[in-house]
Length: 88
Length: 99
Image (cartoon, rainbow over all chains, first blue to last red; front, side):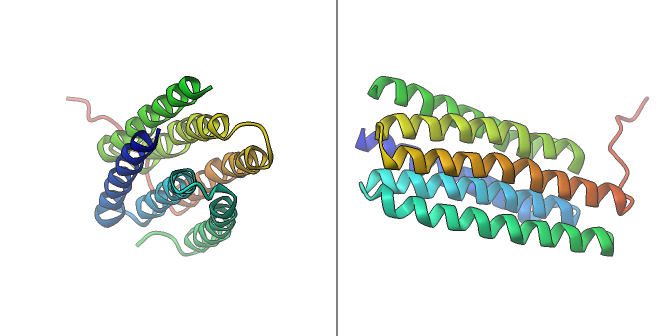
Protein backbone atom coordinates (compact mmCIF):
# COMPACT_ATOMS: atom_id res chain seq x y z
CA UNK A 1 0.00 0.00 0.00
CA UNK A 2 2.84 2.36 0.80
CA UNK A 3 4.55 2.10 -2.61
CA UNK A 4 1.17 2.48 -4.30
CA UNK A 5 0.54 5.71 -2.39
CA UNK A 6 4.02 6.90 -3.37
CA UNK A 7 3.23 6.44 -7.08
CA UNK A 8 -0.11 8.25 -6.57
CA UNK A 9 1.84 11.18 -5.09
CA UNK A 10 4.22 11.24 -8.09
CA UNK A 11 1.34 11.22 -10.60
CA UNK A 12 -0.43 14.05 -8.73
CA UNK A 13 2.76 16.15 -8.80
CA UNK A 14 3.08 15.62 -12.57
CA UNK A 15 -0.58 16.70 -12.98
CA UNK A 16 0.15 19.89 -11.04
CA UNK A 17 2.95 20.57 -13.56
CA UNK A 18 0.49 20.11 -16.44
CA UNK A 19 -1.88 22.67 -14.91
CA UNK A 20 1.06 25.01 -14.32
CA UNK A 21 1.69 25.02 -18.08
CA UNK A 22 -1.84 26.35 -18.59
CA UNK A 23 -1.33 29.00 -15.89
CA UNK A 24 1.89 30.23 -17.51
CA UNK A 25 0.77 30.06 -21.16
CA UNK A 26 -2.94 30.98 -20.86
CA UNK A 27 -4.05 33.42 -23.54
CA UNK A 28 -6.45 35.28 -21.24
CA UNK A 29 -6.58 35.99 -17.52
CA UNK A 30 -9.50 33.60 -17.03
CA UNK A 31 -7.42 30.67 -18.24
CA UNK A 32 -4.92 31.42 -15.52
CA UNK A 33 -7.66 31.61 -12.85
CA UNK A 34 -9.10 28.26 -14.02
CA UNK A 35 -5.64 26.71 -13.93
CA UNK A 36 -5.10 27.94 -10.39
CA UNK A 37 -8.45 26.41 -9.40
CA UNK A 38 -7.33 23.07 -10.80
CA UNK A 39 -3.99 23.32 -8.99
CA UNK A 40 -5.77 23.99 -5.68
CA UNK A 41 -8.00 20.94 -6.15
CA UNK A 42 -4.92 18.81 -6.80
CA UNK A 43 -3.19 20.32 -3.76
CA UNK A 44 -6.10 19.41 -1.46
CA UNK A 45 -5.99 15.77 -2.66
CA UNK A 46 -2.17 15.79 -2.46
CA UNK A 47 -2.24 16.94 1.19
CA UNK A 48 -4.66 14.17 2.18
CA UNK A 49 -2.61 11.52 0.35
CA UNK A 50 0.55 12.82 2.08
CA UNK A 51 -1.30 12.44 5.40
CA UNK A 52 -2.18 8.81 4.61
CA UNK A 53 1.40 8.14 3.46
CA UNK A 54 2.97 9.43 6.70
CA UNK A 55 0.07 8.04 8.84
CA UNK A 56 -0.80 11.47 10.26
CA UNK A 57 -4.17 11.94 8.56
CA UNK A 58 -5.80 13.78 11.48
CA UNK A 59 -3.33 16.66 11.18
CA UNK A 60 -3.15 16.95 7.38
CA UNK A 61 -6.94 16.93 6.90
CA UNK A 62 -7.24 20.11 8.97
CA UNK A 63 -4.53 21.75 6.84
CA UNK A 64 -6.33 20.77 3.64
CA UNK A 65 -9.67 22.11 4.96
CA UNK A 66 -8.05 25.46 5.69
CA UNK A 67 -6.46 25.48 2.25
CA UNK A 68 -9.83 24.79 0.59
CA UNK A 69 -11.57 27.65 2.46
CA UNK A 70 -8.73 30.09 1.65
CA UNK A 71 -8.85 29.11 -2.02
CA UNK A 72 -12.63 29.60 -2.13
CA UNK A 73 -12.47 33.16 -0.78
CA UNK A 74 -9.44 34.14 -2.88
CA UNK A 75 -10.72 32.79 -6.19
CA UNK A 76 -14.18 34.33 -5.72
CA UNK A 77 -12.58 37.73 -4.98
CA UNK A 78 -10.39 37.48 -8.11
CA UNK A 79 -13.41 36.49 -10.24
CA UNK A 80 -15.53 39.42 -9.00
CA UNK A 81 -12.64 41.84 -9.58
CA UNK A 82 -12.10 40.61 -13.15
CA UNK A 83 -15.83 40.86 -13.83
CA UNK A 84 -15.75 44.58 -13.03
CA UNK A 85 -12.43 45.25 -14.75
CA UNK A 86 -12.78 43.24 -17.96
CA UNK A 87 -10.05 41.40 -19.80
CA UNK A 88 -7.08 43.20 -21.22
CA UNK B 1 -11.63 -3.17 1.92
CA UNK B 2 -8.08 -2.61 0.68
CA UNK B 3 -8.70 -3.80 -2.90
CA UNK B 4 -11.87 -1.64 -3.11
CA UNK B 5 -10.00 1.49 -2.04
CA UNK B 6 -7.24 0.81 -4.59
CA UNK B 7 -9.86 0.44 -7.34
CA UNK B 8 -11.48 3.75 -6.34
CA UNK B 9 -8.13 5.58 -6.23
CA UNK B 10 -7.06 4.28 -9.65
CA UNK B 11 -10.41 5.31 -11.17
CA UNK B 12 -10.02 8.77 -9.65
CA UNK B 13 -6.50 9.09 -11.05
CA UNK B 14 -7.85 8.15 -14.50
CA UNK B 15 -10.41 10.96 -14.38
CA UNK B 16 -7.82 13.46 -13.09
CA UNK B 17 -5.48 12.59 -16.00
CA UNK B 18 -8.37 13.02 -18.46
CA UNK B 19 -9.09 16.45 -16.96
CA UNK B 20 -5.42 17.46 -17.33
CA UNK B 21 -5.42 16.40 -21.01
CA UNK B 22 -8.59 18.43 -21.53
CA UNK B 23 -7.03 21.51 -19.92
CA UNK B 24 -4.07 21.24 -22.30
CA UNK B 25 -5.94 20.35 -25.50
CA UNK B 26 -9.26 22.26 -25.50
CA UNK B 27 -9.34 25.54 -27.43
CA UNK B 28 -11.23 28.04 -25.28
CA UNK B 29 -11.96 29.24 -21.75
CA UNK B 30 -15.56 28.08 -21.96
CA UNK B 31 -14.66 24.58 -23.08
CA UNK B 32 -11.73 24.29 -20.67
CA UNK B 33 -14.08 25.09 -17.79
CA UNK B 34 -15.86 21.78 -18.44
CA UNK B 35 -12.61 19.88 -17.94
CA UNK B 36 -11.78 21.81 -14.77
CA UNK B 37 -15.19 21.64 -13.10
CA UNK B 38 -16.92 18.42 -14.19
CA UNK B 39 -14.19 15.85 -14.74
CA UNK B 40 -12.01 17.17 -11.95
CA UNK B 41 -14.87 17.00 -9.42
CA UNK B 42 -15.60 13.38 -10.36
CA UNK B 43 -11.94 12.41 -10.06
CA UNK B 44 -11.59 14.11 -6.68
CA UNK B 45 -14.79 12.39 -5.48
CA UNK B 46 -13.51 8.94 -6.44
CA UNK B 47 -10.06 9.52 -4.93
CA UNK B 48 -11.37 10.86 -1.62
CA UNK B 49 -13.94 8.03 -1.33
CA UNK B 50 -11.10 5.55 -1.87
CA UNK B 51 -8.98 7.19 0.83
CA UNK B 52 -11.96 7.27 3.22
CA UNK B 53 -12.52 3.54 2.64
CA UNK B 54 -8.84 2.94 3.37
CA UNK B 55 -9.08 4.89 6.63
CA UNK B 56 -12.06 2.88 7.82
CA UNK B 57 -14.95 3.97 10.01
CA UNK B 58 -14.19 6.76 12.47
CA UNK B 59 -13.38 10.42 12.93
CA UNK B 60 -10.93 10.62 10.02
CA UNK B 61 -13.48 9.25 7.57
CA UNK B 62 -15.98 11.90 8.69
CA UNK B 63 -13.39 14.66 8.22
CA UNK B 64 -12.53 13.41 4.72
CA UNK B 65 -16.23 13.46 3.82
CA UNK B 66 -16.45 17.06 5.11
CA UNK B 67 -13.53 18.02 2.82
CA UNK B 68 -15.34 16.24 -0.03
CA UNK B 69 -18.55 18.23 0.54
CA UNK B 70 -16.51 21.45 0.69
CA UNK B 71 -14.81 20.53 -2.61
CA UNK B 72 -18.18 19.94 -4.23
CA UNK B 73 -19.36 23.43 -3.25
CA UNK B 74 -16.02 25.06 -4.09
CA UNK B 75 -15.04 23.69 -7.49
CA UNK B 76 -18.20 24.34 -9.55
CA UNK B 77 -18.82 27.63 -7.74
CA UNK B 78 -15.43 29.09 -8.61
CA UNK B 79 -15.65 27.83 -12.19
CA UNK B 80 -19.11 29.37 -12.57
CA UNK B 81 -17.92 32.73 -11.23
CA UNK B 82 -14.89 32.75 -13.54
CA UNK B 83 -16.85 31.80 -16.65
CA UNK B 84 -19.55 34.38 -15.87
CA UNK B 85 -16.83 37.02 -15.49
CA UNK B 86 -15.35 35.95 -18.85
CA UNK B 87 -18.73 36.16 -20.58
CA UNK B 88 -19.64 39.55 -19.08
CA UNK B 89 -16.27 41.06 -19.95
CA UNK B 90 -17.04 40.45 -23.61
CA UNK B 91 -15.11 37.30 -24.53
CA UNK B 92 -16.62 35.50 -27.52
CA UNK B 93 -17.04 31.70 -27.38
CA UNK B 94 -14.90 29.66 -29.75
CA UNK B 95 -16.50 28.44 -32.97
CA UNK B 96 -15.13 25.94 -35.46
CA UNK B 97 -14.16 27.69 -38.67
CA UNK B 98 -16.40 26.59 -41.51
CA UNK B 99 -14.34 25.95 -44.67
